[in-house]
Image 1 (cartoon, rainbow, N blue to C red):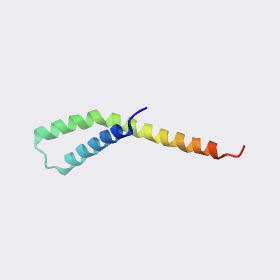
Image 2: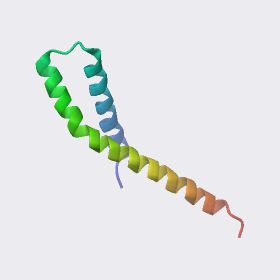
Image 3: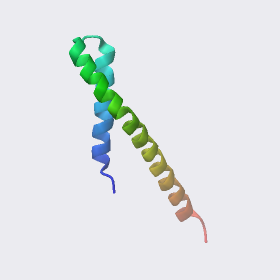
Image 4: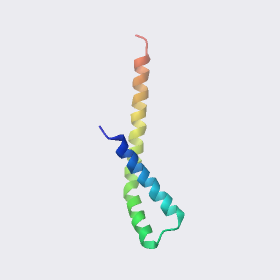
Length: 70
């Protein structure tokens, strides 16, 4: 099973980079480095969000099945 805390750390880092780049207070070399890391994380974060959405849907459907009367 995938560690939810690790996924949260990845998403958090992605959001931090996005905020830093949006602030406009970064030197050019730091901005370049942040942009590269952000670009590497972007597809990973998209996949994580898809995974979490599907996981939630499975949990909801499983709960609905368990609540059905026999």
